[in-house]
Each structure stands twice: as C-alpha cells, then as structure tokens.
Amino acid sequence: DIQMTQSPSSLSASVGDRVTITCRASQGVDNYLAWFQQKPGKAPKSLIYAASNLQSGVPSKFSGSGSGTDFTLTISSLQPEDFATYYCQQYNTYPITFGQGTRLEIK
Amino acid sequence: EVQLVESGGGLVQPGGSLRLSCAASGFTLSDHYMDWVRQAPGKGLEWVGRTRDRVNSYTTQYAASVKGRFTISRDDSKNSLFLQMNSLETEDTAVYYCARVVVTGYYFDYWGQGTLVTVSS
Image (cartoon, rainbow over all chains, first blue to last red; front, side, top):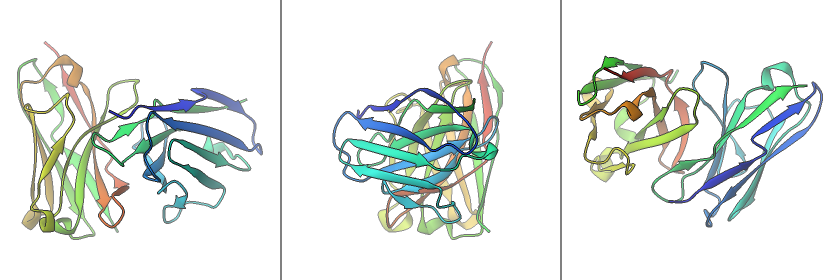
C-alpha cells in the first residue's frame, strides 16, 4: 500500500496568515492527489483534485502543487472558517489511501 | 443539486451484520463510480471500497481490512448505493461516508453526511 505522510500533524496560525501543509507519498502517484477539509462533526469537503485543480466553489485562497511523491497545500489569508483538519489522498493505486491529517488551529 | 444521504447505522454486536444505504439525488447514479470511506472515532479517514459505473459493469474493489466481509452494491433504478457489512468487529466502529467519484478523473467530489456504526457487546 502507498503510505501518505503529512507534515506537520498540527499547526497553529493566526487569522490572516499563510500556511503550507506537506504530503509525501511512499511511492510515486503521478498527480493523482486530492486534498480535503474536515470540520469537527462534519463530513469531509473536497478542495483540490489532480494535485492542483480546485473543486467547483472552492475559493482561490486554496492552492495545491506537486507531482510524483511530494505535494503541498497552501492556504492564504486564513479566516476563522479555515481552521479545520486537512487530509491528502492518493487515488493512483488501490487501495486508495489518506494521510493522517493536519489539524490547523487558531493561535 | 447533488445530495448523498446515508442511513442504516446503529449499534450491532460483534459478529453481527448491518446494511448501510446511501440515497443519491441530483445526478445519474449509473454514470458514476461510488465509494465508501469510514472514520473511526477520533481517527483519520480510511477508504473502504468502490463500485464502478455501468460502463465498467459495476465491478468492485475493497480494502484488505474489509474484503470478504463487506459487499458494495447499488440499485441505480432507485438511485441507491449499499454497503452490506457482515462478521462485524469492534474495529469496524466508525462513521461511514459514501462519496461520488468523477469518472473522467477518478477523484471524489461530493460526500454524504455519514452514518455511525457502533460494534459493541
């Protein structure tokens, strides 16, 4: 199975900050990489697919990059509603696997 | 508007069975792959399995942890997806989500709100 490792596991930031979350795959996944946002008690929300493409309705403050094994999610100008847990996912190879999550907290 | 609504969760004893449903609306179910994903309390997301679309003969794929115990099926005429769970173990306790897959890119777009399954004696 492809292991997805996110860093950091948790992150404290302030409103207005720009943050970057990293996701590393244990083997190459081409660009079959997605990012999801999850708030407590809620279903995940799809943010980005194919490493860098925004899902419909997702604001441009979210951006993704990378290919192969190393990927990043950047969130600019943090707002209170952005504080959540973020997951990466590879869908290049079965089984589909997720990172362990990065919890973004308000400083 | 695309909507996915799961139901059927509840408390079941170890070794028991449960069938989850996912009611889809706002799109043609037969045109999409559909997945199940679960999340144990306080834990991360775990992919459970997939059913492909009509063009791909509704073939299925499962995570090793559930293969042989869980079965994904669908009734496109009723716009419904199902997850039959047998031989349940305490480790299967989780919120179960259904998710729609965009076939042209194989990525998830919409998720349901989830249904909680608790396996306990």
